[in-house]
Length: 131
Length: 248
Image 1 (cartoon, each protein chain N blue to C red):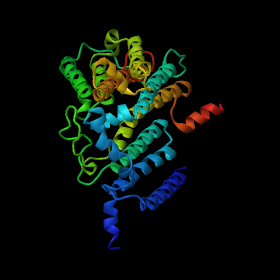
Image 2 (tube, each protein chain N blue to C red):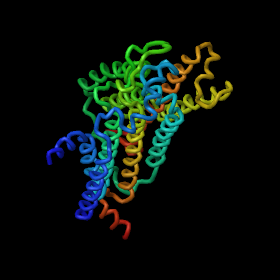
Image 3 (cartoon, one colour):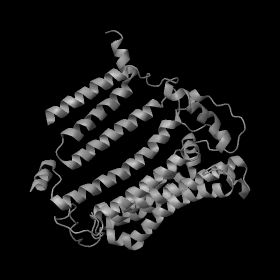
Image 4 (cartoon, helix red, strand yellow):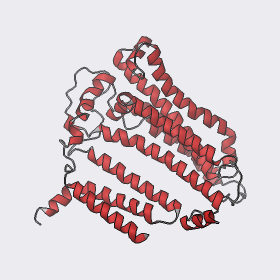
């Protein structure tokens, strides 16, 4: 028990991402309204983005933009442990914008469903298909 | 259904908590994710591309293919929304109810947006141009530009905005961005190097390193144009249910 608390604290980025991820997963399965499912999917996506970005962090490091790095330099002494890992930032930068555009597609599909069935509640759509 | 969902969620949560035991501690400088490829980027990106912002260098140079197809994905998303919503028969009433007719103009709203929009657009260009040296780049600039158009469309109305920036122009702009990106890649190919190998651009009189830097700026411009056009066209189509009449 004595080393349980430090363990929790040392990995609390994972717990934050985990909680968001589970909220999103539950919402996607349990909610009846398709719009709420889409919102849950966005929360799930935010959890993944948080997880990735927190993976790239290093203790005491700064953002991945080199200090005093203007113009052309030959050899500038650079210590990789001073800068956060740029790779997760790159991956998530594109993921955020692509996430927004796929959210747009999801909303367009919802509007289309609403046009055909007059509702976006899952059970009512199933009833309207069976008729 | 809710009970099954709760069970699944708890099971997944338990598995992930078990898995977290093997994960590195937060902020560990020698975690596996930080130890293999990324030190190379941090040490070499300035030397090879003259771009102090490592994220920009990796985004547009080392991972240029990835970003090109991300831009294509955004373009495809815009086209998909368009084909899903435009010019179709309607059985049920609109999902988005049109705003009731205006009783005159909203003076405060319109004046405020007229002050804000130029500032937003100049800031977007700043973010685009300074993506090499500070947090910024094509995606961010595109989103800010798109947001400025959305603000105009909200504070005036959709028709006023579309009279200035028509749907056709938006489509052409979104394609133009992808063409700029792929065009720079193809230009490198024509100049005798690999696709998106910006070093080939040195025939324009730059050193090899500066050719990388300018190539990155060029593709970021393409990304910004596509993202701007698609952000606004998504808003236009979704807000009006595809009819392009009265929006929100």
